[in-house]
Length: 233
Image (cartoon, rainbow, N blue to C red; front, side, top):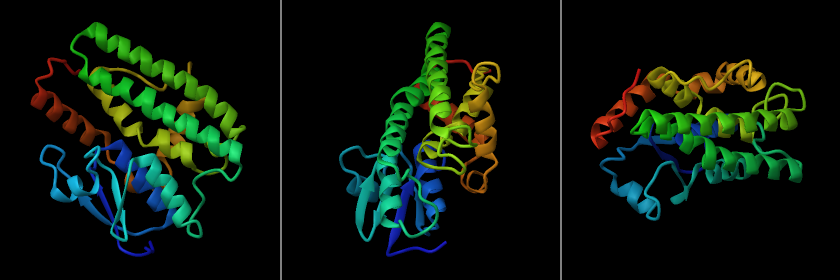
């Protein structure tokens, strides 16, 4: 992959938001120096680069940091517009719709499935699982509208909303392994179930997305660190 200027990515292998950015950079054919971060012992570079949220991912391009995964993906698509495939739709309305659903994923789906892991009781876990499934049902409708009968949210190939949803797939599988929650039901969300298989089979996903077992290991470390009394299957 070809780079442009001095590019660094501060990240954590099991972060879905970092995976999102790495997939976007892969799509654009941009090379970068990846610097793994320990979120329990944050580096001076991370704190200096993202003093507000102190979180990954942070893309540092030419010495200037950019934070928040969706912002970074949009930045990469604009800065390296002449390289690789376009990530955001060209049509303004389609671009706005994709941004809306990407924000929905981060605001609704991510907190729900992480809440399953954090839940202190079976009742709380069931409620969070219900929230996640409701979110996926909405995304099933969004897929119908966005894909227009084609293989991906963006149509014939992976795009912005595919990245926004797809970066979470390995965590959804990890939660399934830990707690027995099935997120993709071919009876309830058949389009999403088929899309998830197609997305996981893309060269980009095979290259970038970590194995679900790595998320399971990290989740158990979190539970041990924060004294969670949840029980995983």
